[in-house]
Image 1 (cartoon, helix red, strand yellow):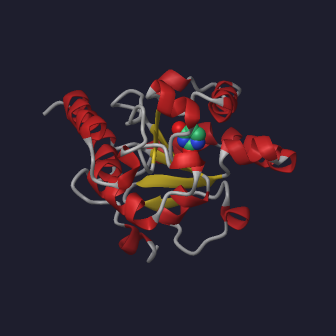
Image 2 (image 1 turned 90 degrees about the vertical axis):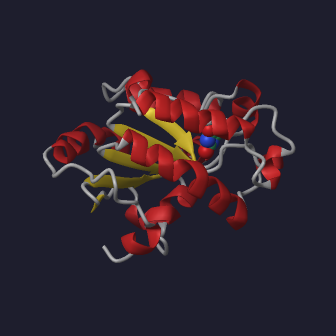
Image 3 (image 1 turned 180 degrees about the horizontal axis):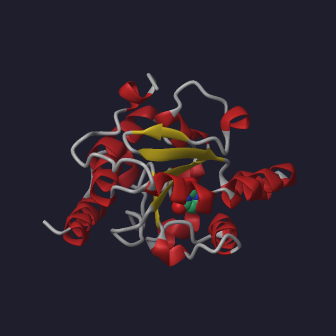
Length: 206
Ligand code: URA
């Protein structure tokens, strides 16, 4: 199946999903958006108020900052794929619970990663970082890429954290400035294997 159609199919499943309690209060599920051929995939935490209203990822204040960070590094939002660990808004923007994370990532995020097969995955915030760097501290490892299955995984602070803590703003800006170079580096690596899974258990060995 063509990658675009595969993604559309996954996203239709997201919109109909009732696998965890988060579907109960949602106005819209937020599957994610961007080209199926994107070289960079951003993984945030979960939709907030505005994302739930619109059914689109990162459209509130954090999203405007993300857009700025992209464009100031010559990257257009329309060239990258943006999604979240959980596709429905946790009520009151609480943290996603372990069973919600498991239900959503095993059904959808893993399949999105396999379909898009990006060269670089950027995790935004500590929850998505934990998927690839289980016991790490974001203050210690942000901006440092590691190679996993032929692609680079780069943990970064969440743009919303930088909005609330001005001291992080410079750190986020510095980390985003590395992205063009990281994409070039990743393009020179052996291609990711589409069959292999980004298994967090396996990744902790790297
Ligand atoms: N924060 C996130 O983690 N994701 C969004 O889509 C919006 C805000």
